[in-house]
Structure formats: structure tokens, C-alpha cells
Length: 422
Image 1 (cartoon, rainbow, N blue to C red):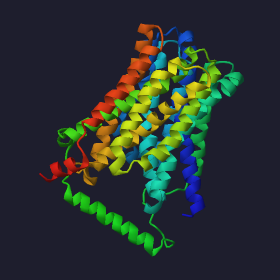
Image 2 (image 1 turned 180 degrees about the vertical axis):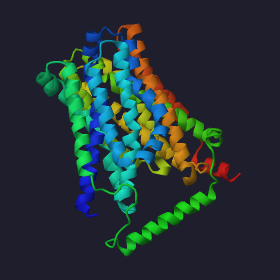
Image 3 (image 1 turned 90 degrees about the horizontal axis):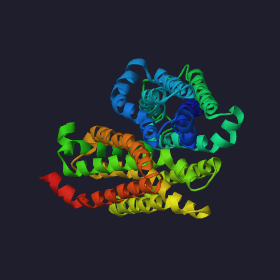
């Protein structure tokens, strides 16, 4: 396969993943309009916003089996169809349950692209390129969500006339990405991993051989463990708590940020634009912060990320004008950087090792999506009970501070290494 063909296939899959992000972010800028139209309380809206995360929680493992059975090409196409169906169904919602089920459909498509995409990357790209390509692929949902925020009040609603029409417009775009993918991938290999190819240099081959030897050494040094055995480790337990808190913070503020900003006197368009800029900051943060967080500096940087998020989210409801952007930058950094840093803590743990990272990663995202369900509901319930967003912001701030305390209880790398030898 030529490089041009490889990158064309990648671009088509990236578009499907961006459509996923577009639909995931579509409701945030119109939460107020949807609540008014359907007569929903903030608590009910919080339940709706967490619906797809709940389905994702239970569909991730079966989704992997589906991909193995139908193939990644069909699975990525199914993602576009399911996500588009979710968007279209939202446009026709008449009450809580119809909207809840419409959003829940989205959770069926999520695992098919988040698992199927990396599988295709491993098929098309040589090992030396996969890290870079996975990083690029992971930007797709954030870019899609950012476009959803920017375009909702400036393009989508003016063109269609309502939030329902905007949902249909976004659904149509997502479905079109599936059509593009299906056509582009018609003759693409979907099973056999690509070799490095004759263009690979001797140095690249040597580096890959060395990396494989290092992975094998780690796998030999650390015995494989079951989920129950990993859950018995205190260090893993603490990282899973961090995952839960990070997802709670991320989904809680992400789904309600536009409404929080609108409550401060901004127009819907201004609030959506500020939220989109926060997502842009998050994309840059996800690319930069993990690189700075070397093993020796990981805990201090992680601590700083949580403290930034705690201060930032507490201030957002109380700042006027351009000053709010300073707080939003802090929020954006925390939302994007906390999740990969948590995975790095698992990778650092000598008791986990390379041999157990797949199991540990599954536990991490399972715990995280529990927070993904709770976050939007917590913010909505607290807003309904208090009549505003100051209390929800303080609760999210307290969550970030609690995660900083949990991080302080995480054993140092030297203590972890000593424990692993015992």
C-alpha cells in the first residue's frame, strides 16, 4: 500500500471519528433550548446527558467482539450510521424518554470507532509510525466537538431555524462521513498488519527490535494478572479513583459549560464560542502536558493539573468579560490532560507491567465512565436544587481537590518498585 493510499484511508476514518465528536458535542450549546422545548428539569437533563456514557460502559467489551466478527471496515461504517441515527432521533424527541433513548443509541456506536480505529491503524501503518498516527487520530473527536460548539448558533440554527434542524444537519454530516469511509475503504486491507516495508532503515529496524525486546523483558518480569488481582493493589485502586474523578469533572463541566456561561449574562453564541475555545486549549494541552510529565515529574504535574482545574471551575460562574477566559484555560488544561496522565501512572506501576496494561486500561475506562455518567447528573441536580451554577461549580472544584488528595496518597515509584519485588 502506498503512503498516499494509507493516509487517504486514515483521513476517511478520522472524518468518521470527527463526526462522532460533532454529535457528542451537539447538545451542549443548546441545553437551554432543549430544556425549554421539552419541559425538562436540570436533573432530567443531567440524566439525558449521561445516557450514552452509561451505554458505552456496558457496550465496550461486546463492541470489541463485534469488530472481530464483522470486521473493522463494517464496524466504522456502523459507527457513522448509529451516531447519525442518534442525532436524527434527538431531533424528533418529544419528551424525556424519547430524548434519553435517542442519546443512548450514541453509546452503541462509540466503542466501534474507539476500538476499530486503532485496529485499522495497526493494519495500515508500520510500528514506527503508529504512535504519531494514534495521536493524530485522537484529535478527531475534540475537533468535532469544537466545530459543534462554534457552528451551532452561527451556522446550524440560522440555516435550519431550530435546534431540531441543527441536530438533523449534524446527523446528515455524520452519515456522509460514513459514506465517504465506505467508498474509500472498499479495497483496503483490514486484517493483516502492515510490515515496516523495504524503505525502513537499519536504524529503524534496530530500534523496533530493541523496543520489542524491552517489552518482552517487562512481560517476563511481571506475571500476568486477572482483573481481581489488579484491583487488590492499592496503587491501582487509587488510580481508578482518579479515573472516576477525572471523567466526572470532564463530562460534568463539558456538558454544562455553555449553560454556566449563559447564566453569567452571555448570549448563546458567545457562550458556545468560549466553550469551543476551551476545547481548543484542551487539544493543545493533550499534546503538550503528557510530554512534559516525565516519570520523575509526573506526580507534581498531575497535582498542578488538578489544582488548576479546581480554581478554574470555581471561578467560571463569577467572572465577567474576557477575564473568564483565564479560568477557562485552566479548565481546558485539566479536562484534557488528566486522562492521559492517569494512564501514565498505571504504566509507571511496576506491579502492572506491560503484560497487564490491556486489563488495567479496561479497568481504567470502566471506572472512568462511571464518573462520566455521574458528572452531568451531579451538575444538573445541584443546579436545580440551588437555582444556579455556583454550587455545581464548587462541587466540581471539590472533586478536583479530592483527586489531588488521592494523588498524594499514591505510592512513589521507588516504593512501588520495592513492593513489586516482594
